[in-house]
Image (cartoon, rainbow, N blue to C red; front, side, top):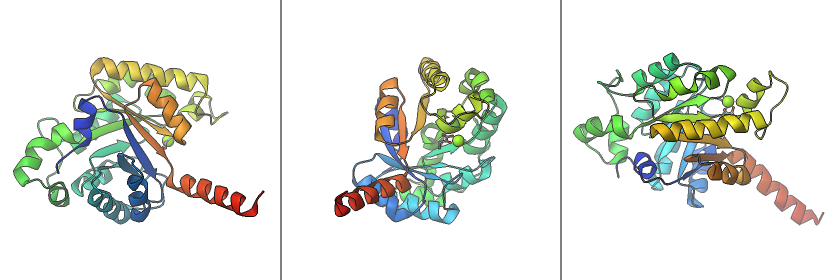
Length: 255
Ligand code: 3PY
Ligand code: MG
């Protein structure tokens, strides 16, 4: 019981997470059952809202695993509420300045780092903590990540990484490549985007901060793990379903 993501990161372990776009609890259970270390629920582009994410976080916890959430644009309050129901990692999209990063920390960390509002009743039950142990450990153990996925974010990346209380950055390779190419390309392996990824890993490592990245499938996750990212979010559950269904149908038809 208790928080576990931060402890694993502190040991230098890489974390392989299932990216659950459906926000369906049963899908998340199936993903962690095959061995993923945790699950992420996507409330920006995924298909569920607060209630689905809440129930999915609980289902994954019953399977002994932690959860993270990627909230919607400007989803500061949404992220705080999802921490209250047991998410350990919060990811905000389109963080483009240190000011955005400071607002994120202010919303998700208790004083003296920020001004998170008290009310983590479900998280306390789920993590097997007490009011006192949650209060005393939350700032150190909740992982707050700012998404770097625009040209503006790349320019501000050092300042964003320097925000006190911000635990690290999360790369969105789709938006990053679209932004860096001025809309001409969506390519996770675009050289300019890969160069940014390498620089971010280095800049974060220097500061003892965490790097995470969305990976479209296992091979992308392998490459990004070799690049040195700490959290590999492998997606999505809907792609896993399509890929498995396609393979089964192909085998069944003998084509
Ligand atoms: C991106 O690649 O832009 C993301 O936000 C990952 O989901
Ligand atoms: Mg994105």
